[in-house]
Length: 312
Image (cartoon, rainbow, N blue to C red):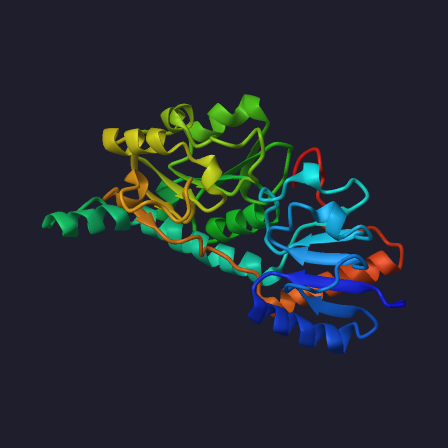
């Protein structure tokens, strides 16, 4: 009979090998298994997964903690995860750092009209556009969690006026913050570049829609780096075609990968990347999980535990 706690990793296999080496060195009293066909799961205490099996409760009857290997947890169906199982999301410094890098790239690209110049090049046009100072373009950040706060601070440090919006009140030095649905319109009305970093919940699904774009200044820009489910594609295409939204940088789309004729993927004023804004570094992710397991075994509260009601 195995008396050692059991941890199962089920995600990208090469990363799993990195995790296995770190677990062997840092947490040798926990048995580490990489998921594959035939691997025993009924004695597992811990599981790391992006998308756990649909029959999680049956396969993992002893499971105590499920670690999501991504920053978000909207891919998880909480109804299929037993109440007794704690769900913990990834908050990795490397993931935050790469998200900040991408956000700065996106903001500068939008500020300096990169998607518009790319469309001009494809159309054979050579035309200059007015250059604004960073101080003349306000950036609005939707979502002020770990990633949103880091992005807001980094953009602020580049000289842009920054405002932020979240469900509950937050305070960030040098950032004007708004909270709650009642303040959304005021927040949007002053956002020349809008960054969406909200979690995907019932309340936020489809939030990048016609009414949101209409509330923004004419000719504003959009940087979507949260989830594709935030975007109402037809509404964004219409806003781009009318000039209400001048251009967009999208790392997420409602359908991934997109169809070849996807209107957002093909739109000349949209720069698209394939959901690469940030990634969890294998070594630092493994150490975060190891730290959480140590806390759990010591009876201490788990950090970054997901609130099932709020889904983040």
